[in-house]
Length: 314
Image (cartoon, rainbow, N blue to C red; front, top):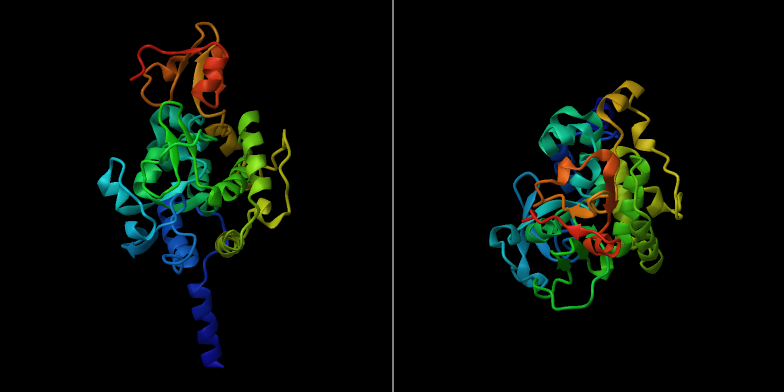
């Protein structure tokens, strides 16, 4: 009897807690242990490039560039290591929140409990080559004209001028279903253009065996699946969010920190001047009066609407 009791206690101690995680560092370590530990070789590989890797430290890794034909574009140090990529970027989840306006991501991480849960949500985290993670930045996903990739055999296209990224086909469906999940769970807004793209990718690239397994492993960590992977939910144009991830927070908390929103790709136009600003490199980005703001998912969309880039953008 004593042996059985000890065994049960050991199982409980080794099992992950079924609850939302509110610490990004903890989430990465748990993902390594409970989701990706056996995926370093011969599986999907790193998200954008399909590279093998080996674990280093608490949750980091070293990329095996020869396994996927990866070539360094510009950042050798980051190309050699793995990083945890937010499919829906942290900036996209946080930049409209008051904490971000007051001090950026670091301030949100230390003061805003809603952002802490969003940032740490393991359903939104994948293993990436560090340089690919850096180059993706907070750019929107899109479709780009075929051209040689600077990453060797890694089929990742990045248009730095338009701030658009097209990933390899193998992960487009997974990206779509993660986008649906994050926007639905945390009541984020997705532009009509981005919805249409994600709906197309969802149809063209069905759920894979690994995607289902990954979802099941994460569900054992946090107690809930991505319903767009399991098929419990479907996204249609103009989808009404369930905001399931906000229901554990009291009204006072939600009111204090502001409701999270995502608008297009974060390119901000001024209705009066017909000038648009990028979230990085444009010093006047946060100076546009809220009543004059219009947001676009890409520079080409802003230009098509008759807007021009601010002259002080670097």
